[in-house]
Image (tube, rainbow, N blue to C red; front, side, top):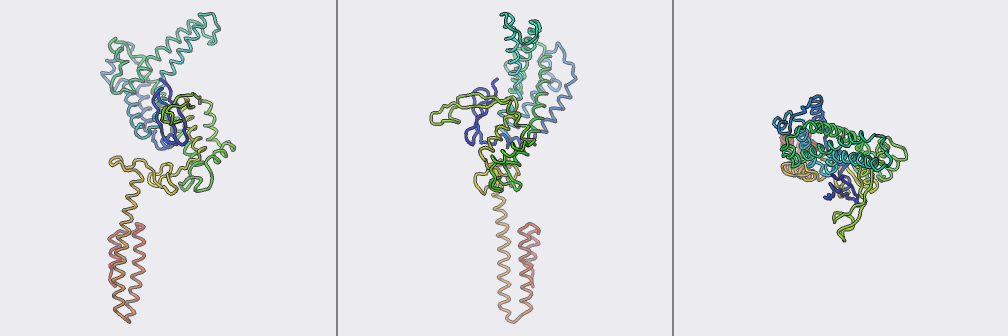
Length: 416
């Protein structure tokens, strides 16, 4: 399986996923989605599964059909089920992050294939009388090659099961028909679970770090973009972090050594859209936080405006100077976004305010008419002024939500 590669095109980013598919997202999607996700629940579930199966003695003779007949006790069924649940949720909530996360979570086969190639090359060198850079004997290399080969096979089975769950993948059906014992698959499933836990822990830690970095460079204390609130460009603030050797910045800056570059052809999703195909530089890494940091650097370099949504409290890129609400779906039943909900609330508040003002004006006019007819009645005039002051205060309190409509109506319609 190929890695997922990341490419930047102005204020968009393009992922080349699994060798062919190209997905385009707005710049900042990875950082925003990472900060939005609650990954603790998945980490807790994964740890419970690991404790459940960690010390299990897997039978050397049990086959895949025998294990799948008892799914609650089948480690690779439970691990595939866990991954399926986690991936479906993340795919819906964070599609950009999912594209990269899937590549990282299901990368064991790729890793063991590289090991196989390494040991196979070393064996060929020995057979041709060349140098042996591994310091291993030919017998040891054969053993390592067989071990890596076995792990490559079981990892591919596990990856495919995670992708097709609850359906059994085609690659597993041959092993079912041949009645091959599943002990190696069970051990590989535990290895997958440990990798999931490691990845989730790294992302949870990175989430806190990128929140800190965003607050230092992208969004001010009042929730508005840095340039708007302080007159400071994110790029300049980023340079200050680098010059001052900020601890969080330095931690991720060191990870840039884990990023490698590949030139790939793009279709009309980016680059030179007139020709339909163009060459572009893509970035890839076995370190997921390193790629997210690369996106963060790009956000600061582009002086991207970032604000806090006044409805949901999450980061977003405002499309206008006065935009206060994001386009995330808030009500999953209706599909209403924060912007939609905020507009409805503002309208309702406007109606509420108009209703209160209308009652105040109507009652005031009536009381003024009474006073104008009672010429020389000083007491009525004083009583009207007292009523007017109380009514104005009640109107202000009602608009602030400090009193109910019933109490407001009682105060306004009170006779004097």
